[in-house]
Image (tube, rainbow, N blue to C red):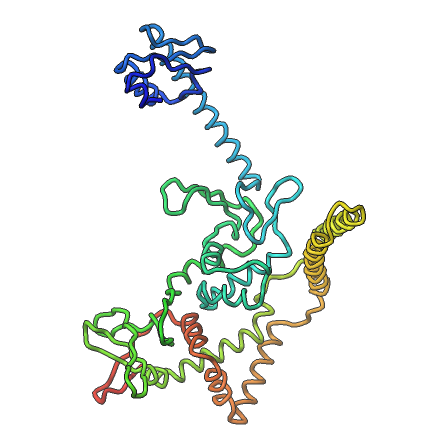
Length: 411
């Protein structure tokens, strides 16, 4: 239309109302300037506007200012209402994994998927990468037919909602606003912060033909730079090396592992003890009340009955009925299992003193039979290279090794 105006084909532009043309004062000024330049006039029938006169152009400007003011007021009201909704737990957008909307559209924990989120954070804190976690979940067909990607895991780890907060706006902009404690958290705030710290340690491994056990962990003793990983090629035996090109320092991986054997085995013993004896008392205390679970099970049972009636009445096809019925059955089974676990939570009878005593008795027995060192070595050696890398990443922030005059590695 503007092109035709410039070519002299148009004398008047007619609109129903001015706010259908524009509500921006800046856009209106540009439009009026173009109209005047090409001897064309704007007529708005409903607002009785005609820009062919000075009074008409002034009236147009005043109406546009009022329209823009209306937009800004509505925007402020919308923002105020949105802020209030967020603070009361009504989060906008897609519900993140582990949560769902209740009957009042409030974001609440979904007991059927909550444990998946907790497991993802635990796996990440164990040193696994985004890709390794997604591969594991796909292999186990967790929440199938959902397909897990490394980007999906990254977004879960970065999402503040899992510690109860809601982040409005993109995290890489200055306009980000965080609302604290607006929903029930799935993980503790300390655990979420630990995951962000772990992010700095978990350097994402790009495609490599070798796995390095001490990847990104070894620092040069002279310049304190992170040593690069390299491997020898050719037909000879392939050794793994860690080198500092700046200081011409290098270490062979098998020699590092040999030098650190005692220290590594101590970590292995600690890890075994934690998994076997201390995790039960470190785990969060389970609630014995099951009213919330009972309500969810009851809701799913009612959904199941409605679907069954719809099928019997011929409203839905057999294929749709079977799929929906199966999904609801799976959710009910998950909730029933959780209910059983909570009801039996008090049946656990142990004390920290008993656990430590059991640990010490087993350790002394292994020492007496000269099997402790052998057991720890077996535990370490049965790990794959990837598992060893994850283990080192979990326990070691960084390390610096020195060589003596005979070129042997010292601690």
